[in-house]
Length: 283
Image (cartoon, rainbow, N blue to C red; front, side):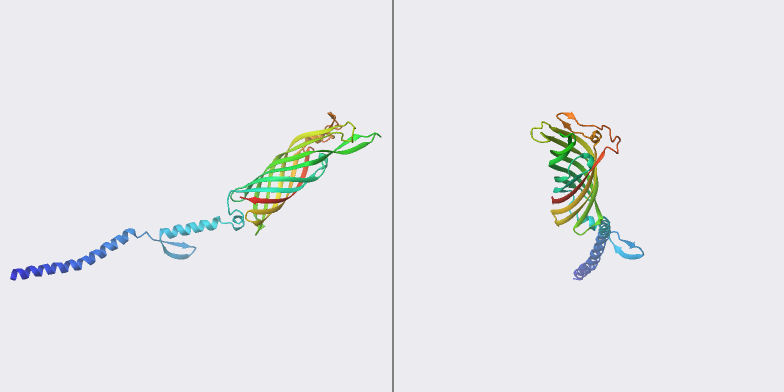
């Protein structure tokens, strides 16, 4: 009986020891696990202000926020909410030709394809047409004097330009663009009996010239996909055919009488001033 009591006492003492040590071990193991997953902490400052402890995730979040603030341009982002937009524009306007071109001022119809890349840039492909154009021609009348007539024809131009958006000159709903470009102008005029019926005088002129241009444009946003605008563009043509004075033909014969009258690069330049009203759809 004494042996049994001693054995039972030892068993009870062992169980009590296990019960006391198990919570301590569990607590120690839990502290160890927490130590393994606890991220390395650091402190950071903005100026002289100590913002206290933060973990790595918070630092990355604040870094992203700082980059977002630096990249945000309210005036630009309002107009470029969708990057790489395509703008299709139909326009009507006026072409005002300088005197040496001998072409009557007229109404022009145009179409533009515009690719607006992110930020401030627009790449523009423009085409304008005047299918009812008139060019002045002069001939000797029956009394020996000079008689002027208008020869019918077509003039059209095709230009590639780079547009730059200016956020400082733009306000809510109104965008200011400016830019420059280059292109080609095509002249094709022909008319039979240009001085009247049965006169037997047929007039003709055709040529292609290079040009450069600068432009400004204001666009107003009615809807996100619908804009209207006003534009002005100055075309400068390398019109060296104007050296010939009268550069058209009568019955295949050149009417030039002052060839080389304005020799030189500057003298060969002619201008066309363009005013347009634009309606654009954006995709």
